[in-house]
Amino acid sequence: MENKKLASDNFKVPALPAGRPLHTSSKANIPEIKEPTSASLKNTHDKKNAWALTDFDLGRALGKGKFGNVYLAREKESRYVVALKVLFKSQILDADIEHQVRREVEIQCRLRHPNILRMYGYFHDEKRIYLILEYAKHGALYVLLKQRGRFDEKTAAIYIRDLTKALIYCHAKKVIHRDIKPENILIGHNWELKIADFGWSVHSPSSRRMTLCGTLDYLSPEMIEGKPHTYAVDIWSLGVLCYELLVGLPPFDAKHSNQTYLKIRYVIIKYPEYISEKAKDLMSKLLVVVPEHRLPLTSVLQHPWILENAPEGVPPPVFNPENLHPNDKH
Ligand code: AMP
Image 1 (cartoon, helix red, strand yellow):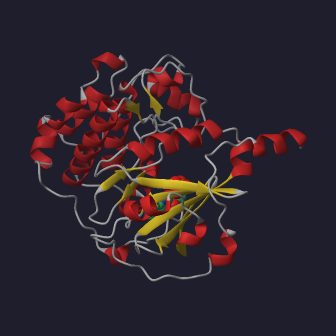
Image 2 (cartoon, rainbow, N blue to C red; image 1 turned 180 degrees about the horizontal axis):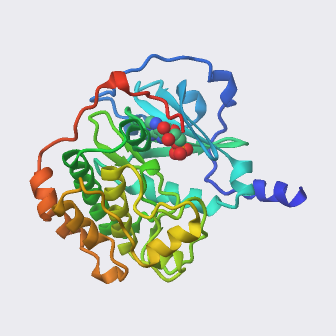
């Protein structure tokens, strides 16, 4: 207990004024507002220097994560609509992921790309950390995929094209995401994909061992074996994602994790017959055991499956909002 108290006091996030407790304002139900075109959250922030919870009107919960909830919120001065991710310091310390949160903030705040969720800033109070995030109006890709079962090849190719562009950008900034999967991808105002959740990301080069937790499905052979890994881990997970978007299940899905492990290790994949030859060709060039032999991301954009199904300029499809539940229920 004593240790924990000490650790909690040592949680070093730059000192910012404490906001009022979440529960006093969480009942406010703000209407959904259009994202402002000119008002800039950044300008407001520059004037003030530090954020506090009192700067925001809180709306409905958008979803529940392992370490806290995400709320719709509106910055009072600029009326800018954001998503506020609330993390509990005690849970972060208990799970020993302080470094992960720190990295997520450091990395995501620096990235600017239409297919990467913006993080505008953060603040904290005694018990919680608040991440100020871009609001992704259409929620999690995971939910959309579950609702639709699987996507047609054109839709999947557009998503893969845009994610490839986002990963090219990350890699140019020397950032490896390391956790690309539908749960970590959100859908924005114009139905565009946004990579979120940089909790596992690292600055390259990295030879760190990853603690394996959660599902193995998206991990590359070198990651599950604890070998040093590079940018190519994201190319592998792009291949896994491509399969899951087209089929509805990840390619190495199995009842037991040791079976998944073997399937990944020996790249045992069964393609349903409705998958086109070109799609199979792309996936088979991404899902390659030797990291250096995986198709480079710039070549993914030139692959015949992408060129045929997702020519430059073709936007992601708009799904009928009546069939969609805005709240993540998983
Ligand atoms: P997380 O804690 O990041 O796993 O988020 C939990 C859930 O909250 C996600 O699955 C989404 O449904 C929702 N969510 C998280 N961030 C946002 C956001 N920026 N915009 C809209 N919904 C979000």
